[in-house]
Every structure is written in structure tokens, then in C-alpha cells.
Amino acid sequence: MKAQAQTKDEWREWINKNPLKVWKEKYNVYTLNELASRLGTSILTVNAWLLGMQMPRDERMARVTKITGVTQTELRTWYNSRP
Image (cartoon, rainbow, N blue to C red; front, side, top):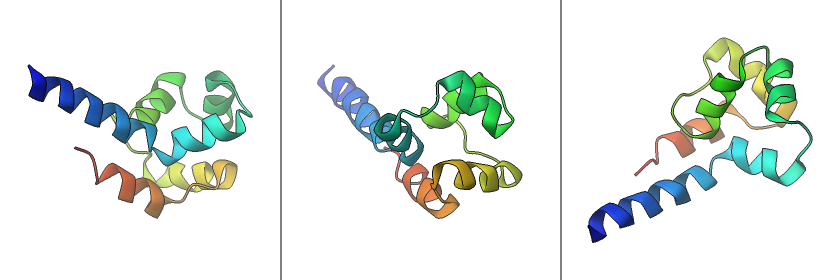
């Protein structure tokens, strides 16, 4: 049971380091709905990016970078460090 709790904590810690999540919390500029609209995608997709369940596709990444300043390299480095 302790290992499972540790894994959950590691997962939460990893999610909290997501560059997109950090940007969204730091600047709090857009609601999830507004951000999804500006990125030309759905709320579910943006939420999946924020939780590390998916990565933006290459064609969407340019827009992500333009709006948030988060680069593909930053996001992939974080994503590849998942526990």
C-alpha cells in the first residue's frame, strides 16, 4: 500500500511540474474553455495535456508555444520524465 501511495505522490508531483500547467497557474490568463478556444481544440484535449495523458500534436504545438511560450522541447522533456 505504501508503494502505491508513493506512486500517487510521484504522479501528482510530476503533473505539477508540467510546463503548461505551471504557465496556466502562474499567469491565470485564460479559463480552460478560453485556452482551448484560443488553441483551436477542445477542453478535454487541453485537460489531457495538462494531466500528461497526451501531448499536443506537432501542428498544434506552434500555437501552444505562441500563446504560452512553452516550447515543444520543454514539454517533451517534462513528458519523458514521467514516473
